[in-house]
Length: 189
Image 1 (cartoon, rainbow, N blue to C red):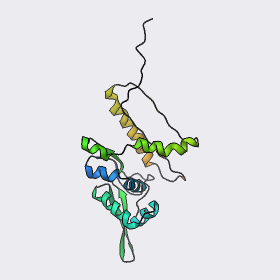
Image 2: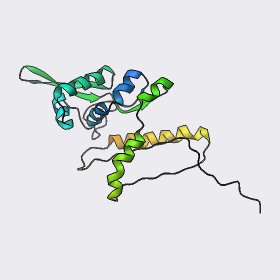
Image 3: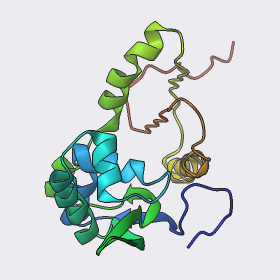
Image 4: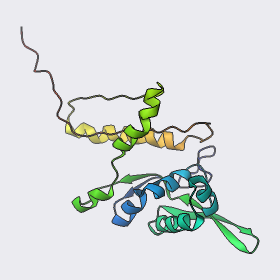
C-alpha cells in the first residue's frame, strides 16, 4: 500500500496491480468503466458524484461500479450516513492497472490506447498544444523490459501528481516492434 501525504487520491491504494483475468480486463477496458476508474484516482467518490461527473443516471453508474467492485478494481474506502441511508465512497484498488501475460483469446478484451490518444490529441495538435515524440531504434530485446519499467515509473509519477490543475492532460506511451529502415553497417573506407 502507498500512503504518501499530498499525493492523489485521498485514500490508500497499491501503486501497481497486474491484471490478467477476463473479468478484470472486461471491467477496466469498458469505455464508461474506464472513465469511472480514472475519476476516483483524484479522490474517492459516491455513485451520485460519479453519475453527475459522467452525466449518466445513478442506476447506470451503480451497475458499472458494481462490476468494477466485483472485478476487484474498485472498493468502498469509506462511508457516511445521509439521513437513514449509508452512502458509500469508492476508490481504486491500485494507482495503475497493468495488463500482465494474457492468452490469445483475451487480446480482444484489451483496448489499444494509441488510436484513442490520436483522436483525442487532434484538437491539441491543431491548437499547437501537443507535446509528442516518436522515435525508432534497433535495440537488443533484453533491454526492452527494463526500459519499459522506466516508462511505468514515469506513469506512476504522473498518476500520483495532485489533480489540482484547471485543465486535464493525458499521457500515452507505446513500445512495440516495428519494421523501420536502418542504416547499413559503416563502411571501412
